[in-house]
Length: 110
Image 1 (cartoon, rainbow, N blue to C red):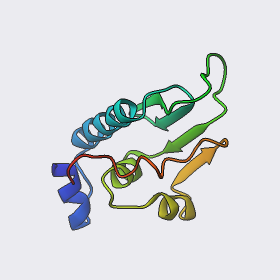
Image 2: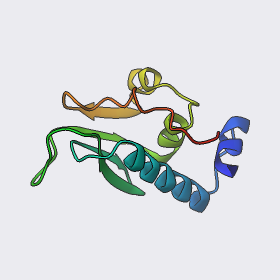
Image 3: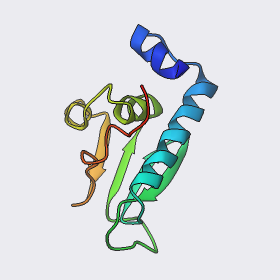
Image 4: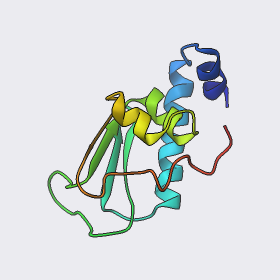
């Protein structure tokens, strides 16, 4: 993954490639953690609902995770841990189910 290689070198990934990688990794999360109890937002790329549990249908979901595309790629590929991201303030998580430690890193190659 070109985005991962750029991050590993400490370079800024190309914007289009970063958006594509972040979107792909969100869809992978949605695939491996089907459900609608948690909304994961990576603005301006996309948002998905995932994780089995009580379904959310209207208004702001009770369990929301939000981060930027670079942090999301790092989390999803194992380049950053959930606790590191929370501690650095790179992830905002609200709600009792807003924790992805059991799903990250995603089962895709670095």
